[in-house]
Length: 244
Image (cartoon, rainbow, N blue to C red):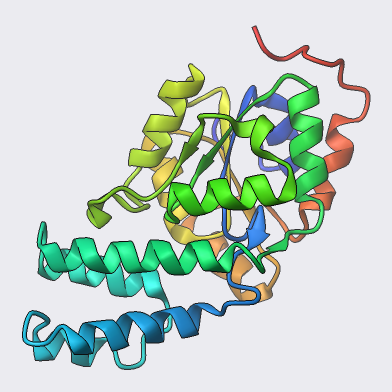
């Protein structure tokens, strides 16, 4: 089944035997208490101290960039495989780990995860954030048991960030799932692009009209404004019924 086969969010979820969650957004607001703009500023400050290893024109492109992943991705594109990119990625991982201490749970996400697991649906995290930061958050909020080893985050090579489907491929492999029986829940065009490349049905999460418009224009047909909307789909599901 693909997005075009079932545009209703509830139908997509009801058909899935494996759900792949993006992390920042559908599960939590990672940078709620440690803003992404501040993290981007930290990366720029570090890069400024690393001159001349960082080209001046590259620094110039980052002046007004508030997305730390965009900074890392551009560095990887310009300086692939360099020590500088590795160091920048380590700094971002450290900043994300700090952010987990004040990350705000997305309303309804905790309940949805617990209900999905109780229904026997396989769960995995597929994210551009670091796996170590995700694990810290899951431990803090008591969700580790629902994902286990199925946390697939950013690799050392930032060129594998979504929309590259690398983390989704790893999740399908570790959960023993096929693309068509799975469902990706994400909040970005990159999430949609990664899922579309593999034929994984996609469910968008968009709190704002702007984000909904971006996902819709990218091709997403099923979009919800709240994770809580999905919880009733599991009413009456028999425990463990979906897992073979």
